Image 1 (cartoon, one colour):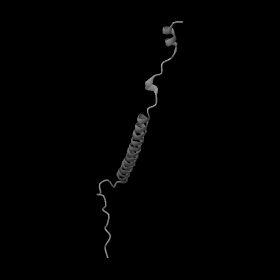
Image 2 (cartoon, helix red, strand yellow):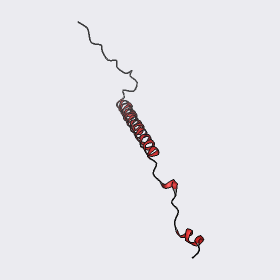
Image 3 (cartoon, helix red, strand yellow):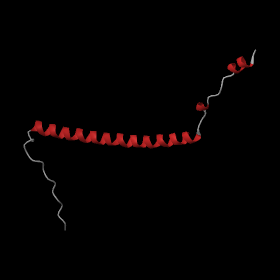
Image 4 (cartoon, one colour):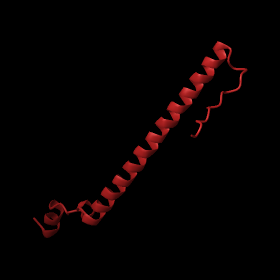
Length: 81
């Protein structure tokens, strides 16, 4: 066996597959930040969706009960003593 054949048999270690602690910390921080932003966004989407459904239900109820032509009632202010 020649030296050239012997070097082909030994697999060379790939430096790109080694763990990088700095990159790992950076990716963990980025994942935490994006996870927090994603959860806040989804909570806001759910709040807006619930508000839209409630408003649509109110409008549909007013339409079917014949209350669509009247103006919305104002809330009375409490009298101060």
